[in-house]
Structure formats: structure tokens, C-alpha cells
Image (cartoon, rainbow, N blue to C red):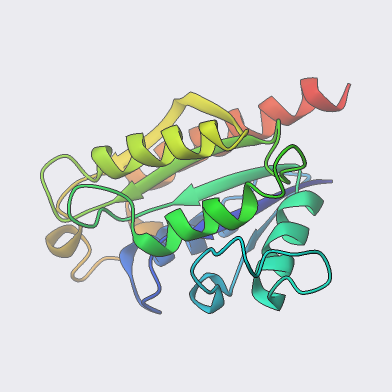
Length: 185
């Protein structure tokens, strides 16, 4: 069984990007389980003064453990002011530590998402790929999906019912799961 952890950069319960994450769970390739990590909103802002063995905040410890237990990570992000949401960047900061022992090190990771603008959040996705890569993840640059005009496009349609979304998301999931196999061999 391949285990993929899904990190959603939107805290809104009914956000389009959360719906895309739910769609990914539904589209999981055979032999794969996708788990949406709840709790990014519970992470305190990263502060090295509290990131001390024995006193790491529970939400940060849970995130690190979830990433360590996963075979791969799928990031689903909206675009906030032309970049990634603060909650997602904060998650990267927590997951990238302790230095030299990041739970992200070498972990296959893909970034997808949707945004209101005409480019579907590509700036946020590019920034997410950059920061997760710097943090040590093995970012799959070719596994992408940016869906524009989210507010209009999904006003009355769930992403799971959109053929373009399901086809592109399935391709990303196949690439992500495929990236796990060579690492496990």
C-alpha cells in the first residue's frame, strides 16, 4: 500500500482546494491511500525557541509524524496575494526541521490547485514547489494541475464532477505514486 499525505493550503471547510483534495482521495490509484492532514490551522507560527526536543507543539509533532509516515505528499494550494498561503509556508517551516532530519527529505511531492485568477494559481504552485524543494522534498516539477477561475467554474459544480480536473488530477496522482516505487526499491 502506498500512503500519500495531502496538505491543503486553505483552511476554509468548503474551499475549492479542499474539494480538490477530497477529489484526489476519491481518485486514489489502486493500492494507494490518500489522507488529508487536518490541523495546519493549529500550528503556531514557527519559532525556533519552542522547537526544542520534548516541547515541540503537538500540532507540529503530528505534522512531522504524518509526513514521516507517508510515502509521498500531495500539496493542494490556493493563491493568496500571488503566492502560497501563510498556513502552508508555516507548515513547510515546521516540517523542514530539525535541520538535517526533516521528515520531507527525499519525499516525492507534487503541487496542484485552483485559484480565482486566469492562471489558476501557478505563482502559488511555483512558490510551493520552491519552498518544499528547499526543505528537502523531491518535487515532481512535471506533475502539475492549475485550474483557473475557481469561483465561477465551481460555483455549481464540484471538482469531482469536472472531467478536466479528474483527468489532470489522476495523471498527477499516477506520477506521484510512480515516483515512490523507485525510491522504495
